[in-house]
Image 1 (cartoon, rainbow, N blue to C red):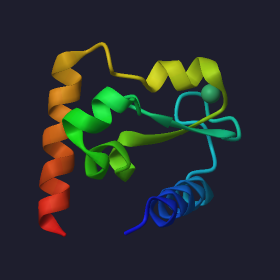
Image 2 (spheres, rainbow, N blue to C red; image 1 turned 45 degrees about the vertical axis):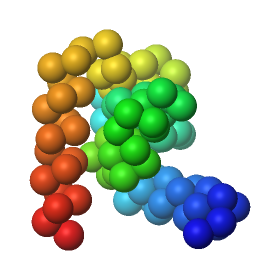
Image 3 (cartoon, helix red, strand yellow; image 1 turned 135 degrees about the vertical axis):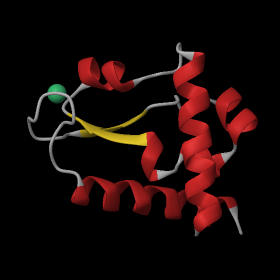
Image 4 (cartoon, protein in one colour; image 1 turned 90 degrees about the vertical axis):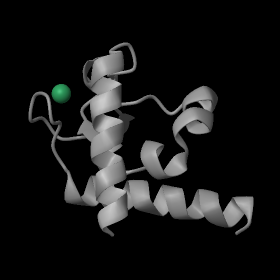
Amino acid sequence: MTRERKKFEIDEHKREFLSRNQVCEICGKPATQLAHRIPQTETNLRIYGPSIIHHDLNLAAVCGLKHNAAVNIGRNPEAVKALVLQIRRDNDAR
Ligand SMILES: [Zn+2]
């Protein structure tokens, strides 16, 4: 798959996720952005792979930067480990 095609599919997935999740999961206000629980960094993409980083369970609809930061578990290794396991189980079940 080409890089452009892949990027297009990820963007589509994000739009589709926000259309299903329209309120901030922290405060319930209208969601304006998509947050990643395990941050979408080059390093994390290399370590965990796109199937983890772009998975629905790693995404959260939020109202802004403050609550974007609130769902970030990047500094909590135990939480990251638990979420990665949960996503792997979900990916295996598909
Ligand atoms: Zn909020």
